[in-house]
Image 1 (cartoon, rainbow, N blue to C red):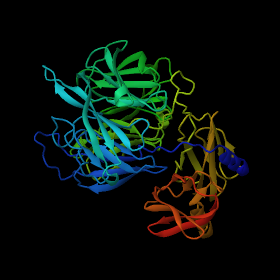
Image 2 (cartoon, rainbow, N blue to C red):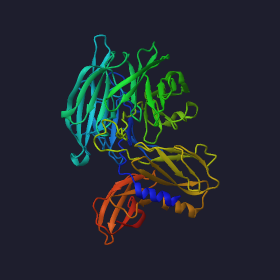
Image 3 (spheres, rainbow, N blue to C red):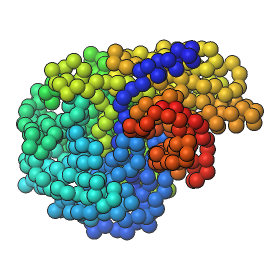
Image 4 (cartoon, helix red, strand yellow):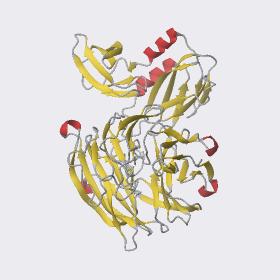
Length: 579
C-alpha cells in the first residue's frame, strides 16, 4: 500500500498552494461600550495561529490595537499574519497603525466599530501582494435606528514599507444607500478568481450583489429577494461550498429572531429559493455559522445554540438543541453565545457576548447535534473578548464546467487532515477528520498497520501501542494529493520516540522539480528551511510554519543538493536531495 501511495503522490501532486489566508486571527476587546469609553485594565489582545490540529493563542498583552466588535484579518499564502482591521483603522503585522491606515470612517470612536461584519479583506484578483479591504460607514435614520450608509473599498499594497504595507487607495466609494447594519460578506465567483459581495438593503426586499474584480470592471447591482427581510442585529454567512447564503436577524428583544436561507449562484451572484423561519426567544443578536461540509447550520442566540440540517426539504423542522447556556459569569456578565466563524482546523469558534473571559468551541460540526462536540466556555482567556474575525472561505475554487468557468482554473484537491483521541483513557482509538479543499471526490486512508478506509472521516482502533505512519490520498478527476503524518500512540520506547521525531521532519519529493513539501511538527515555531549545493552555497533560505509547507524552488539547475530544517539556529534534520 505504501508503494501505491508514493506512486500516486509523485504522479499527481497538486499544483495549488495552501492559501492559508485565514491562518492567523487577532482577538481582543477594548471595553468601549460606554460613552465616553472607560479604561479597562482587563483589556488585551491575542494572536491566534492555527496549526494542523488546533488554534494556539499567543498573548500579545495590552498593545495599541483596539477592538469593539468589528474585526477582520488576513495572512499570506503560507499563513503568516499580514494585517488586520477594527473597522476604523488598519494595523500591520507589527501591531502598529499601517501607513495611511487611520481614518477609514468619519464617525468612529477611536476604539473600533461596535458592530461585527463591518469590514472584510479579500486578495485583489490576479495579484499576489495587493488586497482589497471593504468596509461600511454607519448613519442614522429619523427614528434613531443605526444603519450602514456607505460601502468603501481600500487597497493595501504589501510591497510597501519593506513588507509592512501601505493603504494606497482609501475610502473609494462603491455604494451609498440605506443598508443593513453589519452582515458584510464575500464569496468566490464561479470563475475561481473574482469575488461576490452581498449586502442587504434595510428592511426591504432588495439586496446588492457587488462583483469585485478590477476597479474599472466592478459591478454594483440591486436585485430583489423573494420576500422582504426584517433586519436587526445579526450575522450573515456563506456555506463553505458557496452554494448557500444565510441571514440571521434579531429584530427586537420582544420579538422572535428571523432566519432566511437562500440558494446562491456563484456564476450570476443571485439568491433564490428563500426559506424563512423564526426562533422565539429573547436575545441580543442572532449569529450563524455553517459546518465545513456545508450540511449543518448553527444559530447562536444568547442563551441557546441550535442546529439545522440544510439538506432537509423542511430545514426548520430539523431544529435540534446543541446547548443551553450554563449561566457562568465572567467579567461581571454571562459568557453568552455570540458571533461564529469556521477555523481552518475544521472546528467552529464562537465569541461570547459582552466581553467575557471565554470562547466557545465545536470540535465536530459535521456531526449531528448530540455528537458535535460543543464545549461552552471551552477556551479560557486572560482578557475579555467578544469578537472573531470576519473571514470568507478563501480555499474555494471555480465551479468546474459552469458557464463562468472561463479562466482555465481547475479544482486540484489539497490534502489536509487532523487526528485526535476523543477518549483520553483509550489512547489507541483515533478519530480522523478530513480537511481537504478544492472538491475532492474520493479518499483513501492507510492507517500504517495494514488497515485502510475510504470514508471521509474515519474512526480507527489500533491493536497495540507504537509509532504509525498514516497517509491520506485524496483526489478528483483533475488530480490527487497525499499527506502523511506520524502518530505515536500509547507508551512507546525511547528509540521509537526518537525515530518518530526524526520522521516528523521530512521533505518530499525526491527527486524534485519546481517545489518541495516540508513536513515538520505542527506545534513547532521559529523554523527555517534551507537548500544548498554540495559546495555549501545557499540557494534557498526562508522562514516556515510548523506543519505542512509548500516551498517553491524555481528553475534550479539539475544536480545534488542538501536540505535542512532549523529551529532557532539548531539543525533538526538534514539530508541529500536530487533535482
